[in-house]
Image 1 (cartoon, rainbow, N blue to C red):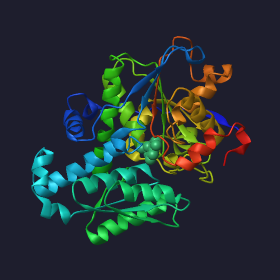
Image 2 (tube, rainbow, N blue to C red; image 1 turned 120 degrees about the horizontal axis):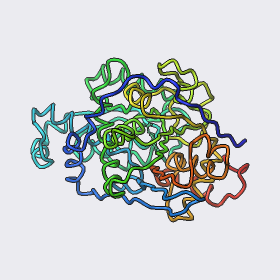
Image 3 (tube, rainbow, N blue to C red; image 1 turned 90 degrees about the horizontal axis):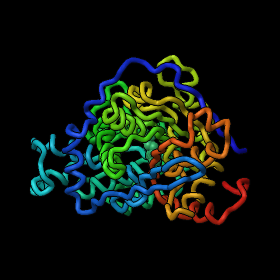
Length: 385
Ligand SMILES: Cc1ncc(COP(=O)(O)O)c(C=O)c1O
């Protein structure tokens, strides 16, 4: 059944310091990314006059580093930071790091993923000549596991654990074996790495800002799993438009909506999703918010929306018409817009009008190619798995 619901963030909390995301503070992150052979700025696509609003800017991450998703921006920066620390180097170049091959080959990284983050970790660990282990929650399709093996150095296992339990399991394995846990979510006592991963995502926001000539979007729609990406992007825009930050909406799948639940309860604390965790939006299938992200989103997100899988499928087909390959999670921010612009009630709820300037991110391409083909060849909403 088609479903879209929105809940307001009524508990905005106290001001947060976003200075770590300023242009100057994130320069080293961009420099590292730019020094990678596979680096290219990803495109910013402008849909003019889409369903009666001013431009919709879509930052298209479907080709980032040849890995089909934005995620490796965070993984490679966090791994670079760990390696620099372990080798006792301050802001080393890649060439300086590569002279220490023996030490690199003795380092091991580990993570849990529902796909794209693990691919980034496998790729980055492989790039530096380090070992890596990637664990995946139950229900993961094999094609995603194989893509992680193919991307880099990882040994990959699909477990019978939920995402949250899998994260706990890999954290225990890391501690037992003295491996480096590169997890893209934070909890009390585990903040340094996820903070670096979030900083890694700032590169895409600064590319987009430059591509938009530093024009201020009025609205930003950000899909969330644990919310680390949304938190980082919100922080960059808050930092760059201090007096009037854009209006931000978080978008999640109906059955795994931890920010929706957190805002619905509205006591300022994080809350886990209560649904059955069934969604084709695999990258968003995370039931507990990242604490660090919530600190930022609590302040800067105006509201949170949930969408059913068929709403995402419609968006994948719509984006394909504009020559944008967008996967199930990749399209979610746009999916809300695509549906909301056709409904006066949703337009009102999201405070959209003909002067709105919208920014969304296509966070992935066809990371599950079979399902992508199936959805593109399907017309009727009920036919979608
Ligand atoms: C394609 C895609 N989009 C969005 C997200 C959400 O990122 P986060 O978990 O930081 O909210 C993910 C997470 O894996 C993803 O793979």
